[in-house]
Every structure is written in C-alpha cells, then in structure tokens.
Amino acid sequence: MLPRGFYSILRVRSMKSIFEYKDYRLYLQDYLDERKRYEKFSWRMFCREAGFSSPNFLKQVRDGAWNLSKVKSGQVAKAMGLVEYEEEYFKQLVVFGNASDDDVKKTALAEMQRIALAHKKRVIGRDALQYYESWKYPVIRELAPLMRGAEPRDIAEECKEYVSADEVRDILGFLVDTGFLKKDGNNAYSQTDQTVVGSKEALSTAIRAMHKEMAGMALRAVDRYSADERFFTGITVGVDEVAYDKIVDIIKDSCKRIVAVVSANKKTNQVCRVNFQFFPVTNRIEEKTHA
Figure: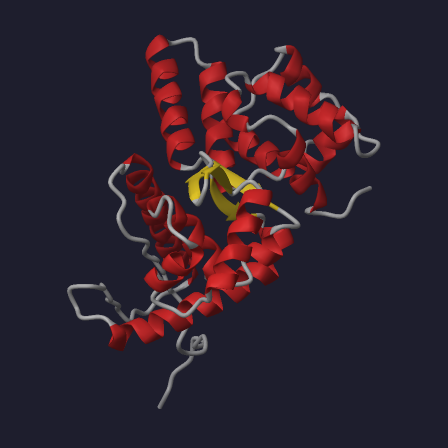
C-alpha cells in the first residue's frame, strides 16, 4: 500500500483533469483503473477507504444501479484525495449525473463551468519545494508575461523586493522546464492556463515556509507603501469552535471569489499578493468563574 498522500500526487500527474469529465461514474472507473497501475486495488478497497460497509457499493454506482448522495459524494471525493475545488466540482458532477430534471442539470452544469473557470489549477508535487522556496517564483511567474521582450535585469528592477538578474534568469528556466511558463520567443513568456496550488499532505512544509516569507513582506509593506497603494484591515473577535469554522469558510469563499475575478480580468499591469490571516491571540479559556 502506498503512503497516505502519495497517490493523490500520482493521480493528478497521470489522470485526466476532473474538469474533462461530465460523467462521475466514468471518473470512478478511471480512478480505480489508474490506482491499480500503482498498487493492488479493488472496488472492495475503494469502498473501505470511502467508509462504506458494502464492499460492492461503488461498483454498483459505477454500473448505474445506485446513485451517490450528496453526503456520500463528499466521502468518495475525500477518499480519492481530491483537493477542495476538485471536490466541489465532483459534487456538482454527481448532481448533474443523478438529475432527471433539465433545470437541475443546467444549474449543475453552470456551477461546474464556474468552478472550472475559477479554480483550474495545477497541483504540483516534487517541484513544489523549489517553487515555494521563495516569493520570487510565483511573482516572476506573474510578472514575466507582462514584460514581453524584457531582459532578466529589467524584470528584477520591477520587483519591490530584491532579486538579482541571475536569479531571475534561473527562475525563468525553472518555470519553463516545469511547465509553469511557456516560452514564446526571445525573452517572451506566457502562462499556461493553470494557476498553482499545493497538495496539503505533501506540501505542508513548503507552503508554511511561503506563508512565513509572505507575512514578512506584508509587515514591510505597512511602512513601505502609502494607504492608497495597499489595503490593511483587521478586527479582534471572540469565537468558539463553531464560529471559527464559519469564519474559515467565509475566508475560503472570499479566496475563490478573488480567483474568479482574476481569471476573468484581461488587463493585468501589476502583481499583488493577498494575505488572509486569522489566528488565536489568547489561550482557550475554560468555563469557570474568574473572581
């Protein structure tokens, strides 16, 4: 059996993108077939990983004898290692596949198209440690296509934080080699049609390092830029576990809406960073009377 988290990287590297599917039963079959390429795997094992007591339930779903419910589709999505936006798409794929009413189908299809547009991403594995090593990789990935024909030193000079021309040259080479950028000609680059996100299991260390570096840049931005060049706001609130989870959901939804705006925008002229920071500033207080 492969280590937990390892297969999800293999899946995204070798399977078709989930956005290419309009039939969730076919996706289940392809997932099973792809998994069997790397290890001993069966419908029985698939059911067990998804938390189903019946060893044949998912095979019956694949055959059309049963439908996945909303709750069960979430279980299956997690068992397949789908990241958040993929899980959303898969759930709508299930709604679309189960629906007999045309209006329901149209609504589900529209939502699938929205998710695909807003969250078409590339999940990276072994290249992530280097990509998340520094702010320079994602910033230059965004900046280089805006400066077609520019020399590396020109790109370096447009960055607010210091980066050398040699570093820019090396980073551009890495981004092209790993498919994050496409070279169109001499010093001309364009992005692939995907943004970048990391698998939580495989990339947590690398992503933590990136968060630390970006937080430091945000700290310097407080004094570096005037109020009309940057936007900072914050509130201090008391919460319990339920409120905490609701606030996290709001932040996640905000991120998705921002990605949708950026995906639809065709007039980019600057690279910015958006940080959402929500963290405890006290210990949890036990229920007791304080005299």
